[in-house]
Image 1 (cartoon, rainbow, N blue to C red):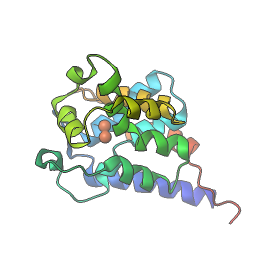
Image 2 (image 1 turned 90 degrees about the vertical axis):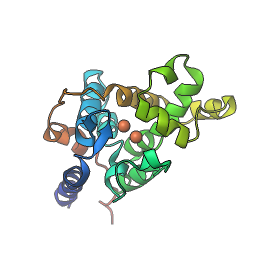
Image 3 (image 1 turned 90 degrees about the horizontal axis):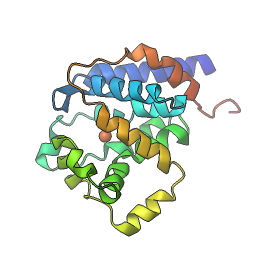
Length: 191
Ligand code: FE
Ligand code: FE
C-alpha cells in the first residue's frame, strides 16, 4: 500500500514535469531547470527534506493546467501557489504544502519589509508581483509573520529568486526522489 502510493506520487510528479517542465519560466530558464536549481540551493543550505521537496515543487501549479506559459504577460494571475499546494496535499503534509502556498505571499512580504528586495527581482517577478497584489501592507506583513510556516516560506522564496541562472543545471530530478519519499505522508494507513 505504502509502496504503491509512493510510486504514484513520483509518477505524478514526473508526469507534470514531462508535460510542462520545458515551458519557459522566464529569462532563459525553463520550469524544470528552475525547480532543480532551487531545490539544489535548498539542499546546499541544509534544508530538511520536506523543505527541499517543497522548494522543488513550489511551482508545480504552473504545470497542472493547460494555460499558455506567458499568461502573466496578459495580466492573468493563475494562482499557481494555491492550485499547487492543493494538488500536493494529496501526498504531503503542511511542511510541504504550506511553504508552497505561501511562496507568492513571501515575495509580497519581502518586497514590503526588505529594502532593496524589489529592485533585485527579475523582470518576470516584478511583473507577476504587480498582478499578485504588490507589496504587503504593514498589517498584512505582521499577520504573515505569525503564520506557522512563515520562516520556511521566506527561505523558499530566496531560493526561488536564486534559481534563475541561465546555463546552470542542477542535479537530475531523480536526485530528489529521496526527499520526496521522505516527505510523503499520506494518511491512509488506518483506512
Ligand atoms: Fe512561483
Ligand atoms: Fe519559482
